[in-house]
Length: 263
Length: 317
Image 1 (cartoon, rainbow over the protein chains, first blue to last red):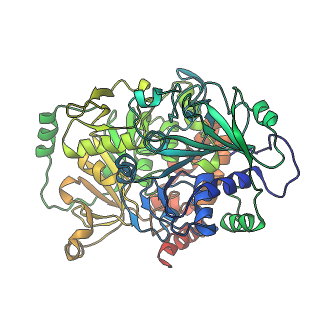
Image 2: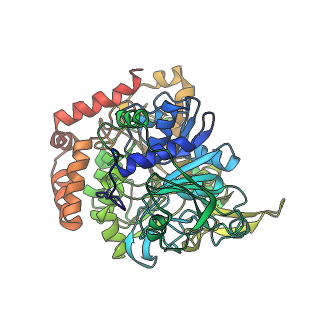
């Protein structure tokens, strides 16, 4: 992808994507079944397996159940043979996606190009869909994952990415807030967490608006709000995350020595 | 799109489904595809893509093809860039996330020179499955609440007749021709697929014709020794073409991995100028070589051996 810059420069011994990967990996628990997209999600899930979740089962839309991706052998998408390393099963893409619908998955985990206050994701069109300024690659399995399970999204915190209303709902979050997700026919799942380089966000139980739950060390609420294109709610018991540890960073760098995902 | 059921059966019954040899050249297999046909493309993203067959169709000058695939990569770009295809039906279309958003996909879709119909990945799978099952649609629980569905007039939302729940119905996809690359098959078209299958088995059974390309042709005796390994049966297959490295520069599970250096070179070429870069690439790698072997020569022995070493390494554990 394009060259990444921090939203706010601050002294640290890790990059934005390393911070995202480490923070995301901490949310995944041993024993969970996680459906991961390519990039930071794949990396963070693999990191969680290595750090604290040897029993974390990772599914890929290429058709893999329970793989352990090899260090230095990260796949260019979730559809290559590298995704099947030490897997328990390979099956068709359709059948692995149907496991989401059947309800076997605890967490879906994806990256995002654009997100709004209700956690809807856009990876299809920038601008008007009929005459877009940019045609993006599209949903892939994103729409299925976000429609059918609890979701974690990892992305850079920038005003142009955090918009009041996405140009196009590719992968639904809470749609228009309130009960609109359920009313649209999506009776299960929903946005659980959004992890950025500034903090961790959740969604209000009633309004379904994005809510700041925790800040990364040295980050202020103002800084998060300034980098967001809509008004954020802030949790009453706002937390502060622990910075990435040496161990987390060293395992992460061992997984991606060529910096394929951790630019 | 989804055609009448009796018409689908009539076409199937009319096919020669006997146990017969059907090994032919890439050029002869290309003649089985007509201008305006709908094609289903096997594999996904950079995996088991039937590049050799696509290469042959572009060289044969096919036009106005509609191409469906779970996820499209540079195969779709070559089809757009060569003018062979003006409509793609898929869930995701770019070279690959590590190379950024495809400028060729953008150029063709944003200028409306070609169409990119976006469905969810599971919807693509269920459309092929419905096609394989001989039913006109399948119900599913995603795509609701999103804008994806608003751009798909073929989709219906219904209340389930049993439970009253909202469901989406996606129509069957029965392509005129499926292009599928496999590790091995016999001269009759009994195919074994190692590793990831993607949607290929449903696609094969949904299509009205299957062209198999294969790393190698094996004997029918070998097939009969392990019939549980046969993933596509001969009776669905119209042509068998032996093409070593038939997915290059994409991967073929357990045989070779993607040719990453070639992909980097290609990405740089189309990033500079999607139009000229694509024209240059097509001239050099598609129209230029006299044969598939000469094409592989252009990819280079060094990368070919390296991708083969990496491909086989899946069996190292």
